[in-house]
Amino acid sequence: MSLHELSIDEFHYEKKGHIAIMTFNRAEKMNCFTPDMVDTLYACFDDFNKDPELRVAVFASTGEKAWCAGGDLDAMIPAITSGRYKINEDPTKRIFSDIFKPIVVAVNGFATTELIQGTDIVVASRNASFTLGEVRWGMIAAGGSHIRVPREVPWRIAMESLLTGRPISAERAYDVGMINQLVETPAEVLPAAMKYAEILAGNAPLAVQTAKEICVRSCNHEPGYILENVLFQQVRNSEDAEEGPKSFFEKRAPEWKGR
Image 1: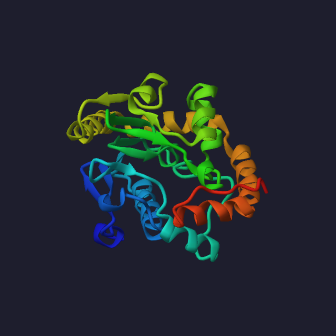
Image 2: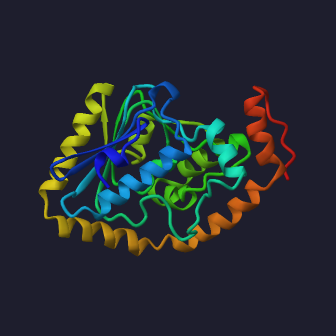
Image 3: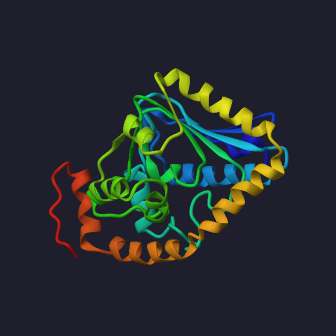
């Protein structure tokens, strides 16, 4: 497929030499993703993975308030509950888990940590924050974060993020190793990410991809992904999972039942 066919208004895809650039383009909605955006994201990264000329991806966004604030509940919840959109059809895989080319992320503003898992280098501005907020709405993250986050940061930081749903500031994220580089302003983020991408693209592609493949495959996350998927389904079918989105739409505090 051509770049024009792959891109949509809310998610752009371009190629610059050996570098692919993916960009959330829904700043007016804090770059929250819809089912169409998720489908496009997967299609673009699949093209990146298969294109022998592409060596590195840069994952960015427009606007300064949010890199991506998660799913657009108005669009995602009806699609999921109706069965039109399925989560984790392959329980052994998660986003980027089978991509061995490096992925650099350029983060401004509020970011869901879920989509950053499985990437390799993260550049963020001081206005960035990182969150896994699903427990606040009666759900759990279903993209591998329960397996990846505790292996990437200290246990207590992982539990604070997963169990409280509260955001972690860019400064703290940098201190605990969630991000590689902290820059002062949003305008500096993409150029800094592109510098990393240029360094990676300048290295021997087979060696770079093999180095990442060894690291990813030796971690053997698949049993954890299967467990996460099974337990996610239990939570997803609970009364609390119905109450969370309902209270969100009704703009009130949720009334949890614990079942």
